[in-house]
Length: 91
Image (tube, rainbow, N blue to C red; front, side):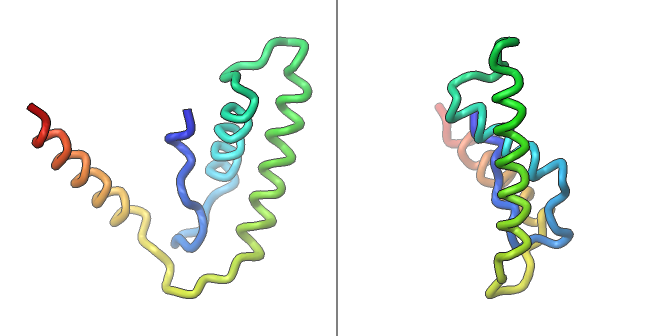
């Protein structure tokens, strides 16, 4: 369920609001144990996503990077290469 939560700090270009919200949504889904809340829980679920999104955005703004920004496309290509190696190693 949390596979789409990716590091968002120290990338160029910076994380978008949509990426931050997607990570917050996955986090709330994980800790609540539900992918889609029932009608009675929709408000609480939505409020939690909003609060986690806001807290995450504040965190990302406050963090100081100790290294040069990473390249998203380069990281994606490395992940694809790891996947190819794992797939090739399977019997």
